[in-house]
Image (cartoon, rainbow, N blue to C red; front, top):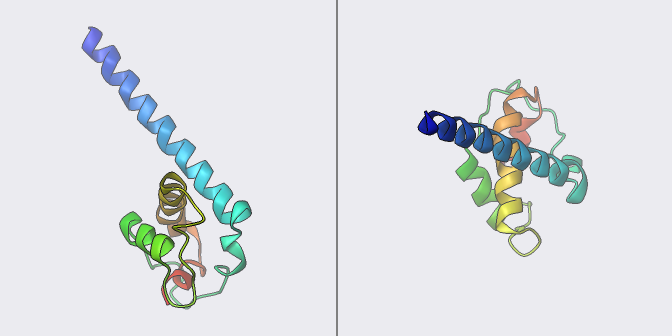
Length: 102
C-alpha cells in the first residue's frame, strides 16, 4: 500500500515540476528575454514544424543563424525550461513555430 502512495506522490510531483518548468520557460520566452519579439514571424507550414527539446536546447545554448547564444545569459535550468516550453507549447502556435528554424 505504501508503494502505491509513493508512486502517486512521485507521479504528481513530476507533473508539478514539469508544469513549473513550462511556466518558467513561458516567462523567459514572453518577458525576461522577450524571444517573442523575433519569433512571431508568420510561417507557411501552419505550425506543423515540431522541434524536439534537445534541438531547442542546442539552439538556445549555442545560437543559430542570426539568433545569439544564450549560454552566458541564462542558466542551464532556464535554457531547459524555455526549451520545454517551446517544444511542448510550440505545437499549438499556428504560423509561428517555423521562425525557430532558419
